[in-house]
Length: 243
Length: 322
Image (cartoon, rainbow over all chains, first blue to last red):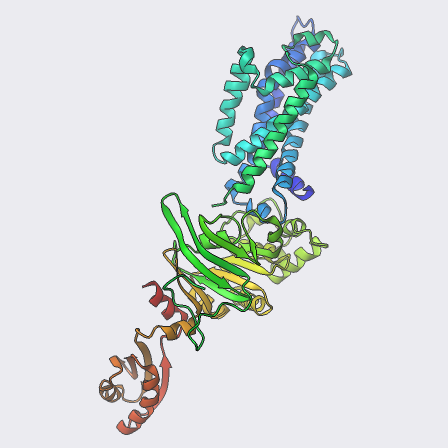
């Protein structure tokens, strides 16, 4: 599994893809700079959490995971290299887990840097470790969940996975789930917000969250999503023919 | 074992001879994609040694190889390699090597890294050394540290061969393995394949270049339009084609005089004269071989050579696909 993990890390961190993602993730930091530079910036930490709430979790985080995870397996199918992994004495589960961990590691590293930089800039000297920790925890959980879903998407739609995922992110996670509580129940975003809410604890910043389920329930639901993603991807990979 | 109607090599009692130790068994296998039938009711068994899978483009060679290596699941029938089913059976893949027709490689890896990746995934005890040895075998050691993304077609084929050989598998499948490789190395690799076969490995090579197939071994599988047309030693297959006239070239001092006598024999179907050569089409080659020296002597013609023109693989193949 380590061999495939390292191979996938190399594949995902080369080319223009990480640069595109880095440029995308620089946007919140630039907004934070603009906020701090403006004349009225009464509550930097609050602004940072709002950015996480409205921009990171519903849009930037899933897009980052989408760009990385759909190519982790889908790219191998498109490039004709998957046989060099599947025709080896390696269990499909180990292959899927290695791919998931690689995509999550790259996504989490990029997201963590962006979140930390954005928060530190916006807080403008008044940041606290717990808030930053909660933001990073929710981001990491989001990376894992979205990567597990988009890994499957890349396997199901090697060519169109990116487009299908893009529509899903913008229309569902960033759109429908944001305007309807009922629809939000079926979104990843709701459980990430609840995780963030639980992480923020008694902080006044926690009031910003529209979390409606407990932290423990959120963790369970998110874990179930990851397990389901891995299980279905593994099953699909075992059934799949390489034409 | 072969599809019904396909010529197979039999022993003197007329019984089809399965390989003494079948490592590959294909039983009534069909494969279709939607409404298109790629392979139909294919049955054969192979043992150790080199076998060439012959067929025109689109005949079903690659589909057959993909089913034999677990890339495709048969729509019907059974494929077994080393006694085990192949599709979704990772433990078996430790004993199989494949050179795919697909050109995809990890372009960002060096040749050594690419082959070492295979060695590591096969959990070899010393993957670095195994990779070096495999690269040495395909004469690619000098380019071991170059990225495979910059390789020529021939070098890509060689690195694919190296990753297929690195774990010393018992069964090897090569899909057009010599494409793009220069003539000198081509001969070396053909000798390597022959050596692998004679060392007890089962080597199945898909090829449409008959001269290569002939050099690597006389055992062939011929697929025509998804069906097995023939299996066995192509010399023996030729013997089975009794309904086809044999062409025999006679090199002599007076081809016209010799032709005038030979057309009177019942087995002679036709004669063609070209300079000092006479080509006789006969239904009974053996009789011709026995008769010609005497006839030449009677007519005062000096005979310099007798050569069969239909014993090569190309003749057999042309007959089977026509």
